[in-house]
Amino acid sequence: MKASIFSLSVWLWLASASLLGCAGAESVVVTTPLPPVSPRVIVITATPSHTPPPPTATPTRVATQTPAPTPTAFITPPAAGETVVIPILMYHHFNPLPAGASELLRTWTVAPEQFATQLDYLQTRGFHTITFKQLVDFFERGAPLPTQPIILTIDDGWIDAYTVAFPELQKRNMVGVFFVPTNYATAGGELLLNWEQAREMSRAGMEFGGHTISHEDLTKISLPEARQQLRASKALMEEKLGQPVLALSYPYGAFDARIVAETQAAGYQAAVILCCGYEQQSDLLLTLPRIRVSYDDTLDDFAKRLP
Ligand SMILES: [Zn+2]
Image (cartoon, rainbow, N blue to C red; front, side, top):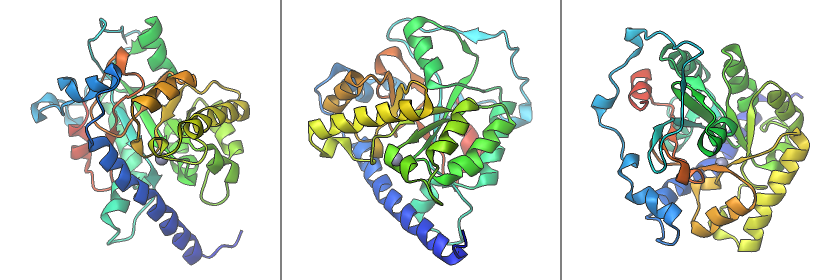
């Protein structure tokens, strides 16, 4: 295809702008106090464990060169109601940005070399990437996890998830989790990863999760529509990849008690939101907090946000 650089970059800007429009909405949604309907949801705002840790909580840095733990080291699930530290990082775009790129664009993008440096850093610090299947097995069935588990999530299925994130993860024997709206993968093309690429990634050990059919805000459509978005996308992704889809990323991070219940009823066993923190517990598997990584984060910023 001989699309000119100009038209491609215009496309990217348009696509990014549309994504960023939702990203702005995402921030609003998660900062809104949650309705006091479901005990599962109430806990999120009330639990002090979601308060960002004080800066003193991250004493280890690259310079200490902490050796990675032996492969035989595992952690086991906490008692009911207790939290366990499992950071879930959130990425969207992997692109170099032009000087003067907007604040919104910088918020939802990291540069490819920045991502590579962050992955190297995670390995140096002794983190082990896991999938949501492992997380669910850990909480629901007591399956052990490697020490310092971490989940790397990449939302929306842009082509750079395939061209940048996938090879960088593979190079390091790390796994990532890709949340893709099914209409996006069906469209494919220059901007979006397609089903064939998703299958290649899945076969290589990457996990795929639901992100609805068409990236709808589930709290703003009718309940039957939301149900369809959750269920049909899960069924199609499972058919296309030949793997169970057990995790969901709520588009725009938007959810409420009704949507959480629908998500569970649709068969998802874990779901992620946009905000904030790294302490997880078994009764919050459908509203797991994440840590956003952005273009302007230095490696030190990145390090400080990790446990
Ligand atoms: Zn999204």
